[in-house]
Amino acid sequence: MKTWQPVFLGFIGGLLLSGVILLLILPQRGEPIQLVTATPDLRVQITPTAATIEVYVAGAVANPGVYALPTGSRVHAALEAAGGPAEDADFERINLSAFLVDGQRVYMPRIGEAVPVDDTSRASASLDAAQPLVNINSADLQMLMSLPGIGESKAAAILSYRADHGLFTSLEELLNVPGIGQAILDEIRALITLGP
Image (cartoon, rainbow, N blue to C red; front, side, top):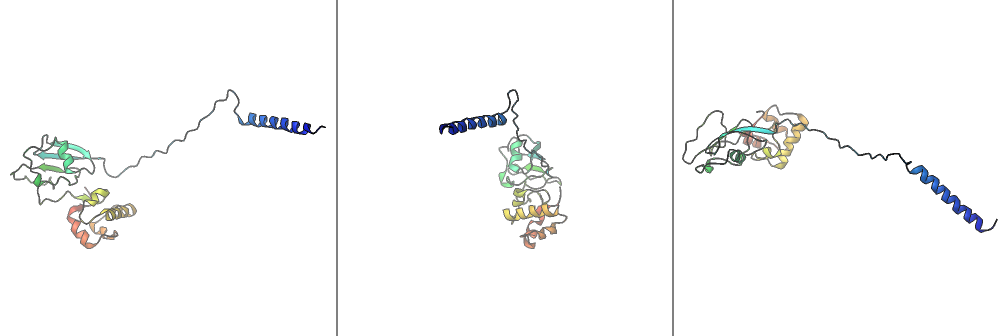
């Protein structure tokens, strides 16, 4: 055999081997190529609180009535939903940044008007009226942070305690939350509730 023959035969053998490998790897003609796509894992998270609340807006507003608002809304959103305050609305006697609760009555007083009081209205109409009660069993971080003495870290601690131990059964149970002492509980006691 001549010296170039083994090189030539090796080259031909390599080409044949490459062809066989390509035939095994490539799909046959007529076979459809299948594309596999990943399906995202969609899960619905159910929250214990409703997505909307209903409040009754009355007094010095364009369109008094019942309005559905997102949970966590504030008094100013209720007034906007009612078409805005009237020209003679007394803004000094209402807390526009107070959180709303389901079933609340928001009364926008007129300048110089004596504010009507009834047992279904809570808060937001007069200077000495308290903010609506915050339900510690359903409040989110922002609602808890609206309480005096409760910043982001204490609000997060309340949410963490609630997630680990379930709903609060008494206001005193807040004393078990890290960072909440008797002084803070006494300060917020009149502003919180366990349920609707």
